[in-house]
Image (tube, rainbow, N blue to C red; front, side):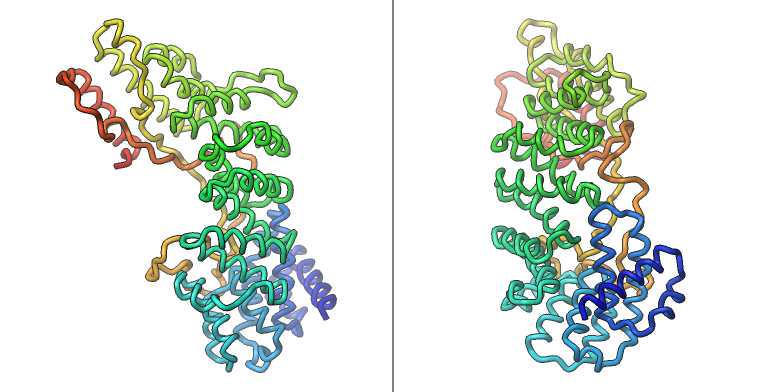
Length: 467
C-alpha cells in the first residue's frame, strides 16, 4: 500500500511539473486517499529540502488540493489510521489550521488521539503551553516514523525556552526518524541555533557540518547562515577555527567569501578584533591561498576591527581608501557613521600626546541600517515559539488557497550576489554614551560632549541606537 501511495504521488508530481492546472490534476486522480495526497506532499517537500526550489510553487498547488480533499472527505475516511495520521502530518506540513479544526470537530476520537490532535492545533495557533500539556505523555519514538518525526520537531520547538537540553534531544529524534527529509533539514537548522544558546561549541560545529553537507542548497539555508554566523561570533573562544575552515570549504567559493564577510562585520561591530581580522583576511583570499582583489567590504570590516588598537586618525586614513560606491547601502551608512564619529573625536580632542593615542572605543560605533531580504517562510510548521504568548497566533487563519506555502525566493539564498551580500541583523550594541561610565575627576570637554551629541544624531538617522 505504501508503494502504491508513492507511485501515485510520483505520478501526481509529474502532472504538476508538467504544468497541468490543479483542477485538471484532481480530476485525473479522483480516487486518491488523503494519506496518498499527503505522501505526495512529503515527497515534494523532500525535493525542496535537497535544493529543488522550482518545487516551491508546486507545493502551494498541492497544499490547495490536499486541503480540499481533507475538507470534503467523509468522516468514515478518517477511521482509517493512515488517513488520521495524514491529517496531522498535513497540519504540520503547512496545512490550514481552520481545515484541521473543522475535520477534528467532526470526528469521534479516543482520548489519546484527541490530545494528539489538540496539541497540533494548539501549536499551529501559537499556544505553546497548551501544546506542551497535550503532548506531554506522547513519545515520538513510539509513533510511526513519519508522524513521530513531526511530533519530535513540534515538541522540541515548544521546549526551547524552558528546557533547551530536552529540545536538543527531541531534534535529534526528529532527525533519526526522518533522515534526508525537510523534517531533518528543519531540525538541523534549529539545532545549530540551539547549540549556540547552550554554548556547546562541539555540537554547533557537528550540526553545521551536517547541514552544509546535506542541505546547503535548501531555500531555507539563509536561516542556517544567520544562525551559523551568529554562532561563530558567540562561540569563537570555544571552537577551532581550523574546523570552521573545513566547514566553509564545503561551500562554493562565493558562499564561503560571503560567510566570512558576514562574520567579519558582526565581529567588528562587537569589538572582536582578532576574529574580525581573521575573517576579513579569509574573505580576501582565494581558494588556492593567493590574495584576491581588494574587496571594499573586507577593507571596511578590517578597518573596524582595528578601532580598539589604533587612533581615530589612523582609522580615518584606512577607511578613506575604500571605494564607497561598491558598498551596499547598509555598509555605506556604517562607513559614514564611523567616519563621522572619528572625525568629531579627532577635531574635539586637544592635540596632546595622551589624547592623541587614545583608541576609539567600539561602543561608539552606531548600528548600521541593514537591509535584509527575508528568506521564504518555513513551510513545515511555525518557527519555535520561545515566549509563551498565548494571545498571538503563530499563523493566521487563511483560506485554503493561501495556506502556508512560501513564494519562490528571488535568488538562491545560499549564494548572495557579491555586491549585495546577505547580512545578519545588527547585534545589540550599547553605545558608549549609554553605558555606565566611571566618574571623572575633571569635567568633560564641551567638544567631547558635542561629539557625543553628533553620534546620537547619527544613531537616529540610522534607525535609532538600542536603549
